[in-house]
Length: 179
Ligand code: FEO
Image 1 (cartoon, helix red, strand yellow):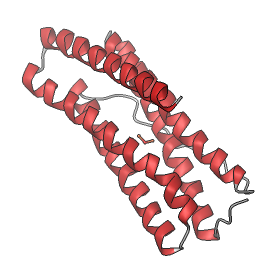
Image 2: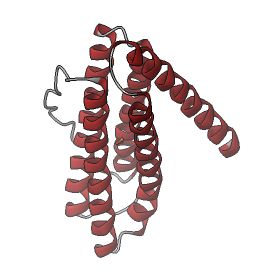
Image 3: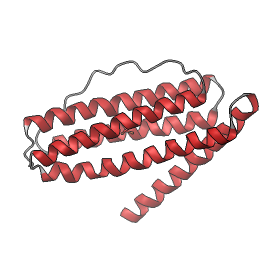
Image 4: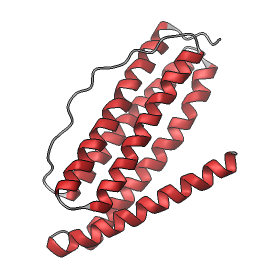
């Protein structure tokens, strides 16, 4: 059993809430895209919503293995509509930046508490956030190049679909390496 200080427990519970909100936010985005007939973007956000749920569950498991019962959070309602696909991805980027900062704060706390196990546990999240931010930044760059408007939306959607497939392939390769 691992000892988690009160402060670490509170911070991990807070992080559970952030990941739960992120999962819900991506789900809302997926069905906004569905409504806009953006199938590629819908798939991207649905996969991302599942990933965020997995991020959340990993913290549940970590706390449970440490002998602490995690607190299931209340989740705020995410935005229902977006001005454009660019606006949607910009909000995603801001959301991911907030999560990255929260992870970094948590890591700082684990260091100041001398909690080596939590530091080690959080390293995976640091890497994951860096990768997620890089993907969203790449999508925003592609949107900039393609531009917006009627026909552009078709190409943006295709591009996001392609990027989604690349992410799935990279994750499959990563889990094969770890097996
Ligand atoms: Fe798990 Fe993208 O925050």
